[in-house]
Length: 419
Image (tube, rainbow, N blue to C red):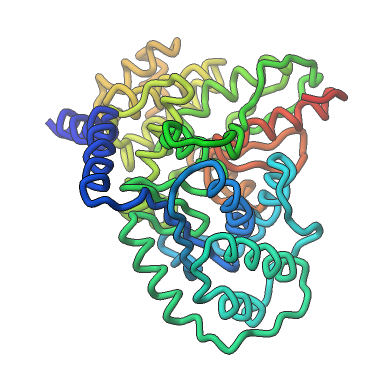
């Protein structure tokens, strides 16, 4: 019963028919009221990804006949953005590589700013309503901020603007900066703008603003470079990454090394409801783009994850690790299979090439716990805390299923070529 109810609820939440119907309803309401299509942008002064997103406001204004409303928002609360120091360090490095990929500007080298400098930027941006003026000011101020240049605050107190921005962000249904919101849906950062642009395609009056970054079909020989794959059995993004990273490793003759970890919530890190809801809906968009099944979910958190990791430990030892990873994740996120039951887990194991005896032996072996903890410690030592994450041959790691293009670049570098 739990499996059926959970699967039906998740299918409804991720239903393209429901989503498209809500889009038509919101568009009809807007047309009836005679209001222009409005795009809200939420900017965090201390957020590197916001520095990139703000640069795109003029291009969006030129390409689409929409009213753009910029909002200034405070740093996210720890409940939705745990490990803030790691997050900031990672986002600085990631913003630098994204800037190069998209032809945007980000200071190099860049360093975490002081609270006083952030306050100065917020006070200068507060009250700027025009999106073009906001973009120009955010670029100038952000360039100085991330470069460590001195900044003097304006006389404006940003408290009101920050509170209004935070309330508007919550109303829009999100919790992070660098977010675009349009008629009931949110698009986080430059990475998700292609989804927004696809939605606005009928309104476009110019070329698309950003291109979709994705690993190519290129092949090469990385000479069995070690490709580490940090994964979780409760991560929707891991589900849509698993087969792709395996194929990427095969195309580049890399050794795929599975590094499973316990989910955040089972490691004491919170995952609030609003975050879970956005992740599920965002994964559905990405799955549709990639042509992957997703939406019939049976959350394996707790017992299901532990049983799955025990069997994975056995699967790796018998050469069936990638097959079981893909089977388990497909069951949890696309087929509604309950891994807490013996029948469910055996089904997931058998189609990955394991036997009932393998499953029984695996469930009696607790050694997977030490392996998962060692993987977690190594992941944290790399400056990361979330999955899916990747590292090629000891190079700097990458976080996110939407960074496989960067993983491919590293494999090409190892092979001595260019992807």
